[in-house]
Image: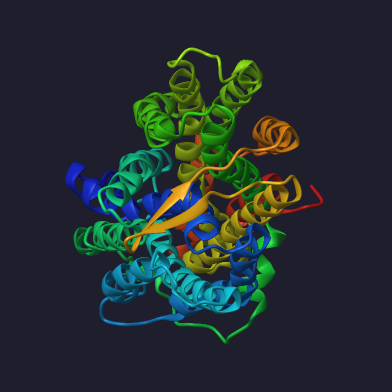
Length: 486
């Protein structure tokens, strides 16, 4: 009972820790909503080439992300395993995000491509090591199943608030400058500061447990690349995460084109995006309460089902629909995605516990890095897919007009083939992905009761306890949660 009571976190500690996810949530939204458009319309890269930039960076991530996870797990300093990377990340977050939105001025497309690729690789490295250190700190904050869901709701609250700002404010900042290129420079600087500074508070909230910082074992690359996939529940959760978030990536990247080219409402883009994200914030306490009464899996599945039903309804959206319809659609999508997001981030801190059950080692950084890499790879694939589909279906980018040294964009008419393809992409791809996510979620078995059994077994092992009953309980949990042959 005393151990359980120490797992309750104060309100302000949850707030301070949650502030760190302003970067994790907000940066992804700015990139998801506006980066592909920035590359095609401002940098003037071919859509297929723009998608290739992001895809190439993920080949780089395939090598570096798991190694970064192993590095943080094996780090031993007087400040812990995670804090040194969070501290170093503060200036690097600012610099990398600023460079990401700096409009390359090379005359050749190849030169612009090279600049964009280098800046994206730099950003990718920074976001990887900072966010994997942040995510790896969650399991150490508390061992309690429900308290982890509460912590996740705080971080998703700040992540979603940041996402609202990131959805609405970028074009507002850009639009305040006569030259669109100056606008993007100012936007990159503003959001670099917005994402970097909250980590000052997060540093004071991070808690690192001495009993988890065991002497590092002999380096084995399989720990970061292969071992996690031997845990059945982790693979299920990974697919629940990737399928749903690729659906979100496709929706975020396509909705800009959907609103400005099909619905003919370019001025509504940031406000429709903001409506979706506000609805996510509103839904968070509902799903946290629901997970306490049922399970995290149930909350996830309900959110995904709501999202699917709303996407089906979008086939009735046309340019002639009343002005409130896109906002109503966005709000309903937000009520579904809110459940998916908060529940999957509440589930992830339980995964290192399963790793400890299997191997006896704590590898929060490894799981965080591998999950982050798979997420970035899926995101890159979705943007690569969308970019090439836009190209193949005949997307006509805006024409750039320069007058008095000021660059402005003028929209071009789109073909009927492109508009039909855009509508199908908008509806069918998310539906297919979410259907797969629901099927995988139905096979996940770790709920509050099972996690309490798991917590007791792990605590007994850390204290050096042995016995037949303890061994039998460990084997039963392994069959239920870990082993593929069960």
